Image 1 (tube, rainbow, N blue to C red):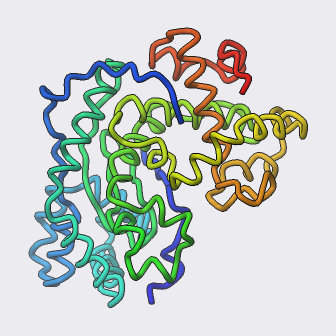
Image 2 (image 1 turned 90 degrees about the horizontal axis):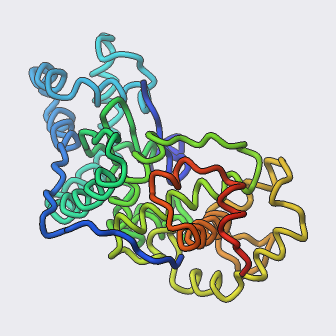
Amino acid sequence: MIAKTFLTVLFTVTLFSCTGQNTNTTNYAETTPMHIQRFDKELFALVDTKDTTMQVQLRKQYPQMLDILGKGILNIQTPDDPNFFPKLITFYSEPTLKQLYMEAITQYNDISDIEKKLGEGFNYLHANFPSMQIPAVYMHISGFNQNVLVGDSLLSISIDKYMGKDFPLYQDFFYDYQKQKMQRHNIVPDYLAGWIMSEYPFTGKENVLLDRMIYEGKIKYLLSQALPEITQADLIGFTEQNLNWCKEHEEDIWKAIIERKDLFTPDHMTTSKYFEDAPSTHLANEAPGNVGTWVGWQIVNKYMKETNSTPEALINANAQTILEASKYKP
């Protein structure tokens, strides 16, 4: 089996250098698909053939991807290192990883549907954030490691993390609540979330629940507007049963947060429990994970209804202002 050192948290963004009115006015009929550069296929050709003459072309065509991959996965600072390509080939030649690599690029041979949806998503972002730079987009394989790589004008997804919840190899490594997020329909939201988070990084207090909730809620709101055809459950990685539980117990969840005084208490362990993918058993045995993000999304939805704010103003508003103006009271 693949060494457990390949494993990391399910949604990792590595940086280098529920309901609400949909206000999306993007004309999807006029949207141009987003071209995704297949670094994954080009690199596999080198790994499979071990043809060293291909290294020159790879370095010429994908200098940033090689640099980021080396730093993020191989722990090598530069492709100029004489050990770079030998170590890279050795890493991807591990039998189980190589088989995973082959199955991933086979499953994702045709990505026209992803390119179309990605074009729609970035069209929304460009319309609402005119100064936002649009990146060059790639695909890579990480061996269950870094699934989103972000660099200067570069964005890449590790497609081996999106092989479907029933993919045999996942059964040995991931829980059901993790596998729920490892499906094809999660790729475009994760691309967009990775880029939004890189352009508008979290600036609040990491240990304060309200700050974290509102930031995550902002991201989910923007994704719901950019990708209106994707269900609420899929955007947050819930089953429909998970989503319905949250809707039915929204008042109880909020009441518990307030009564426990968790909203403003700067305690890392308490705050982190609300964003873990594992079930939120500290709230109720039936509660899904990531309840903090779901509540934050509801607050942001309410805020946008109450204020009719723009997406750009939303992303720059602070958490306390959003909570107060939202008049959130489930």
